[in-house]
Image (cartoon, rainbow, N blue to C red):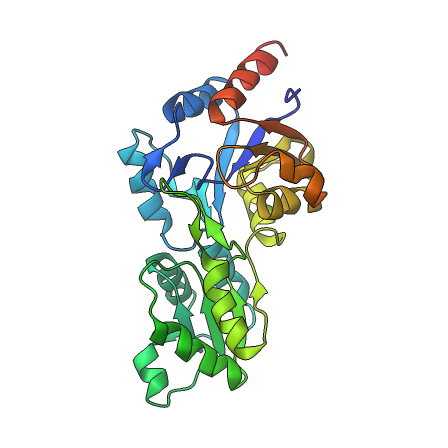
Length: 272
């Protein structure tokens, strides 16, 4: 029973939508949370969009979500790295708008693939999800890592759920550089604890009354378990029920989707 849950950390891809298609019952799910007085923060490994872009996406689905309730691996990565580098440090970024903006906001000077090809150096290579990635983007990242640059990944997700099915994600792009260099990236997003800790801080919650809701055992559920959160696996995205026993990663609860989860919340919370 989910009676003990007052706060949720919600993944987005595969939980709230697939690509540009909202999950059935999305508006009703958030209405249920509001009616029951439950707190929530969205925490996504997808580093491609800014919080403002995600807010616009929610608005297209008829929902008004504050940017403070949206936490991305791009923000988490940039904040984490800013503690180790002086303002103005050069960084080579393979990623979309969300990652570029987050890194620039934290004071990093971004260099381009063309500049690296022309001989410009950078001590830091950061790779996130980017649908517009080119061979040159990855090749120049590999060149810098070969030369000794620190190699950082926003998240390890090898795939992400879309209307068509699972497609290559940030982890797949990082794997190209790893294959070329023999060096594995340092990963910042889920399942690492940093993003969960920041979400808890924003919620003002504790592990005892907060659950991580996600569709991926290896990141959402494993990471939530590791920091002592209760965890809820939804079967609407990447991981399937059969993988629980195979992986050894066990969520506290398993539901089909946000509709069945909302129904359980209404049943258990209204009876408290």
